[in-house]
Length: 336
Image (cartoon, one colour):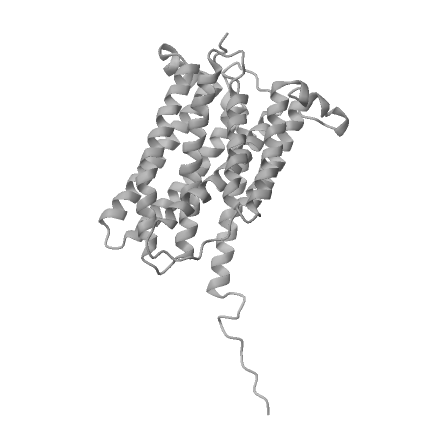
């Protein structure tokens, strides 16, 4: 007689590994949905009661620009975190799978969507016939939009090549194009504003993307002593990056909102309200970073710092989303 053994618990549909994977997938889906709702619904909420008018399709533009910013953070952070990892003596050679090719593809699509908006005179196109591709070459904004599309394409090719580090150059080109786009020639001292934006984007991308890839690396290095050293290396540089983000952000704000009007505009304009929300989020991120650093230096197990670090990277993700929303709102002051 043949005995039929009941299925083991590990092989069952309710195994702990599968349940954990389901919970993680559900959490990621919920976070992505929330991240998409903020830029889509944010313009109407920020503009409520201000008397300002949003540009057509502001929600969609904010979403596309959020995706573009995230696509910048991923490769910059990977290159940064990998460089820190190589400085650690005895660090494992295994590294997490690169997300840069996917980020380049997603960034390419976002840049293509933004270019289509520019090609229709800053209006959301409803048909392919409305898109004047040739017109992109005749305007400054159109040329910058095409530069971003091509730069993401080149970045993707570099990411899958034998020298993935070369993708830093096309990604840098995207950041330069974004900085120039944000400060048109009609603005007062546009080159100063563009330089501040480039520095701000660079520090933010290193901070956000570096922490994301650093935590992924710790997961790959699980069970080794090199993880705490990597967190320590990152924490020291992150303090400088935080200072850079704060300094450039304050300078950029004061260029758009003179000192005697800042407090008023932070509550009465859509741009000011969103900027205030971003400042509060960055302050929360700073507290989480401080908590992680205290755990890293004082806790018996330095890797317990991963808990506040995970919360920090999620908060930084929200900051990126709010930054994308900020670019789609009308500026409170137009410099002449």
